Amino acid sequence: MKYAFILNHQSVWPISVQCRVLKVSISGYHEHFVRRASGVQRRHLSDDALLVHIKAIHAQTHGAYGWPRIWKTLLGRGIRVGKERVQKLMKLHGIRAKGKRRFKVTTDSNHDLPISSNVLNREFTVAEPDKVWVGDITYIATDEGWLFLAVVIDLFSRQVVGWSLRENMTREIVMDALRMAWFRRHPGKQSGLIFHSDRGSQYASEDFRDLLKEYDITSSMSRRGNCWDNACSETLFGSLKVERLHGQRFATRRQAKDEVMAWLTWYNSTRMHSTLAYVSPMQFEKNWLAAQPKQASS
Image 1 (cartoon, helix red, strand yellow):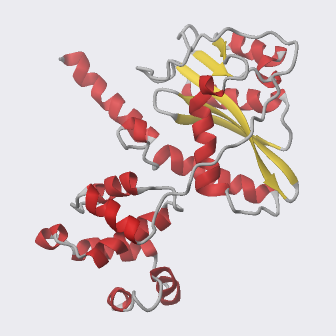
Image 2: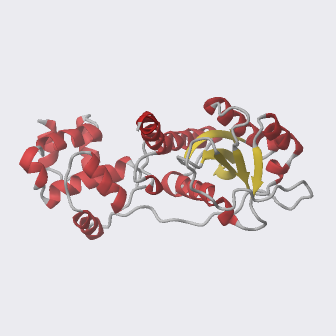
């Protein structure tokens, strides 16, 4: 009855408001709507019904998805619809992904510390997990002061395999992120693993270089002033800030940490990645692992 009431009054009150007042979840309403649209009906959803699904996905992703990912999500939920129709309907109702923004470089490469050569050389396509990791640092403003985030990304699946959140941007933040990645992934020594970063003093520090040696990881660094040499981490930070942080004001660092962690969890496990055939980083890796025995036996 509640779901029927919402459907009949969607032109009067927003669905989110009705769900809150009637104490039902938006996802529950969405699932009910999908069940109603089974069989032949599912193939012939009205524009109004399809718009409900589109708005629900857009809200669930905090506005992160544009029409390609929303279309892929609809197909994944069993709703067969053409991409042109989804694109046209979203344009008509002004539904779009949050726009990309430029962000300032965080790390300081103006130092006299040793610099590694660019071993990676923009070879961003990697055939196996734990062969190339990339690292970077960004910042988040709070009323208590800056919060810094360091990440380690596995280039194979674009999964964030290590991270650290601290109040300062010293070498410890990148060392913590690398240690986390090492103990989560267990790549093993002599694996040929490469770690690529910019020329920031944190990555060039003696302590960080010693940690790379301890793990038998080869160091690689971007060329001076060339952000495209570490484009994957720049893209990750841009997505985080545009999709989740932009426009928010955090009273405390704790609030910012919770929001960052929620997004990282969603990014790894759920967010569709255009370079991974529109599956999440974790799903991409699972699919690859599942295919290995078949390849070995063929």
